[in-house]
Length: 351
Image 1 (tube, helix red, strand yellow):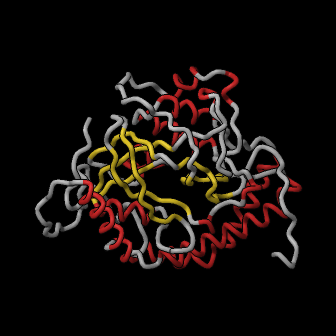
Image 2 (cartoon, helix red, strand yellow; image 1 turned 135 degrees about the vertical axis):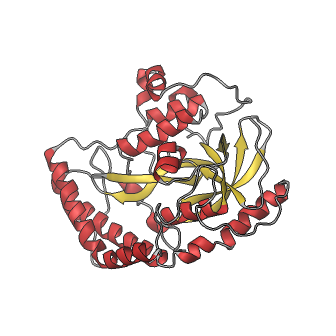
Image 3 (cartoon, one colour; image 1 turned 180 degrees about the vertical axis):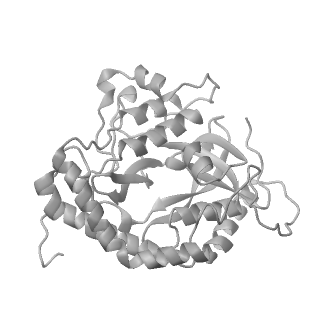
């Protein structure tokens, strides 16, 4: 399948995390792309270093620059019968089920017999600008210092020829785990990526690599207690933002699937406005469309409370993880990885 040219109201969006999964993007967020194709982004690798919640969702996905990552897709993509995640899992060699820490930006890939991690693969979605604005809003984009930030990457399709710039979301450094935590994704979250990769038929070696990645395991009563305790801490820290959240949802100042519902044709269920005639997309117009979509975002402007809410959430996460590192983990076990880790001790001079 060939990549269709962009229309004036469209952008390319590169999804590498849970938005690869149609259960998340289409069913939950009600965003149905007009076209979706598998691709890779050379020079970037997958990481689960975004701060989540101790004992429940330790790490979320982002991409980090890595010039020495392994480019798995070396030949034009051949359409093969779609395999289920269970079938792919059964094909894995037993020795391939272990992987190094992925939150710090390193992974092993037994099928390649190399210590270099693979370049990130994902899905290139052709979506409307309104859909892109809504995706940014649901991911908390709004603050320039914390949370996810808009970035432009060069996507390489599986035909071995086509490359195109696309917009994607990368985490700000302030929202990343420190390297010593070696945070893992939950099994629920990792499975969303695995299912999405199978659905859109990403490179088979990359799919198999996803199944070598470890997931966080909550396997003791102490850790279950830690989950309850950290949840209570997070809610307490987030309490100042609850009135803002409730008011923002009620007034339409924060994203809601009911407020911005996108139809199967990819058009919002609101009164349409006049659009200029569609133009054939070239490499220059694609880049122009992507830049314009990011700079003139009406929907993000509408969600004016997002920067404040993103900052509050980041502060709440920082506080909860500080309590985890210095109080909960020494007693109840790790809430971010499956082994105890050596962490620098906090003191009053360093904070």
